[in-house]
Structure formats: C-alpha cells, structure tokens
Length: 280
Image 1 (cartoon, rainbow, N blue to C red):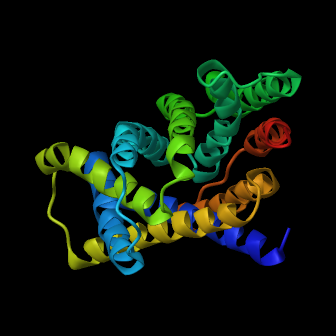
Image 2: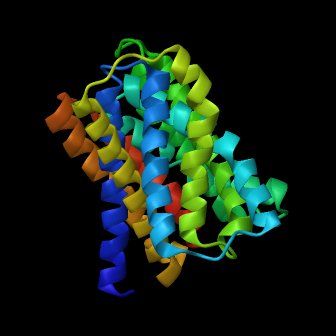
C-alpha cells in the first residue's frame, strides 16, 4: 500500500478524534443536546461550503432516499457516542466503538445474507471478551458511575454498524461530499427543536470552537473517504485503531484522563477480533 494513502487515512482518523475531544470539552459547558446540535450545525455549514466548491452531480431520487434514511441512525449513533464520551474517558469510549466492524460482519450475515464463517464468530468472541475486560472494573464497582456511558458506547457501535450497512448501498454511486452533507445537515434539522428548548447563550469563542469542530469533522470524513477510495478497506482497517493513541493523548493533556490498564488490554482483544473480520 502506498505510504501516502496510509498517512492520509491516519490524518483522517486524527482529525475525527480531535473533533471528538473538542465536543467533549464543549459538553462540559453546554447542555448535551445543544452541543450535539451545534456539532452538526457547524458541520453542515462546512459540508455545504465544500459541496458548493466541488459541484458534484445532483443526487438521484434513490440516493436522496438512501441518505435521508440514514439520518435517524446518524443521530442515534452520534448521540449515544457523544454521551459515552461525556461520561467515560475518551480512550475508553473510542475503544468500545472498535466493536463496530464485528457487528457489521454479523449484521451483514443477518440482513444481507453474507457468509458468517468461523472468523466472524471468533471475532465476535474476541470482541465480547475485550468489552468485558474493559468494563469489568465498572461492573465490580471499582470505578464509580459511567455504567450508562458503557451502554451508550455499545449502542453506538451497533447503531454505527447498521449505518454502515445502509452506507454500502449508496457509497459506490454517490459523491462523498453529498454523503457528508446529508449526514451533517439532516441531523442538524432533526435536533433543531430539542436544542432550541435547551439553548443557552453562547460567546463568539464558543461559536468559533463549534465551527472548528465542524471543520475537523468534515475534513476528517472527506480525508478518510478519499483514502478508502484508493485502497482496499481491509488494508486500511488497522489504521483505524490509531484513534486509541490520539484519544489517550488528548484525554490526558486536555482532560487529565488516565485510562485503566484494562482499557488497553480490552483494546488488544477487540482489535484482534476486528482485524480477523477485516482479513476475510
């Protein structure tokens, strides 16, 4: 694989992890629903600007239906993930999201009649074992609270897997800028009313931070998408796990988080399982 493609994928992961950290910081000052809405609002503005510059072909009727159908899933995935980020260390929440490729393989077999072979079952076993290792201190009460955060992270991984199943059907025939625009503008519209009910005054600095987060998200998605367009997903899958490095560093320096050793031990098991799926 070309080194530049690998670096592009790694950059995309770093940008998205940085966006997660920015929103985690904002959720400490603003209501959760408001921070989530602002993330998509600013992301939508950035995505529409990129769309205007790229000027791709107009989406077809089937593409519009497919993209709109994904909007509720995007809201559920992002909402549950960012809730988990708000109550869990950034590294732990991101590591639990690594279960998504395993769930994709299982759901692909159940919904798309794809083959569920021994590797998929082994990956599922490794993933579940890794998850139990990670959350065991919480189940034993050695770490206070955050049980809902663990549940939210797992729900986000399953929801994201459903999201990817739907994305498979439109990604091959739709321009990436159109997909990114839908998955930002659509959730912003869905969240507008509940966010308005909880809205709090913001400074220009807050707006600038949210705009920065939106730009990070759009840049990260487009960068990662362009990398996957030039190399097989199975060859780039391992790079996804560099998110744990960025999450650990950002969590430590920005929030003073020190993940437990079980986080990294569980991550090894989850990555081993997800890696088995990606080599199918």
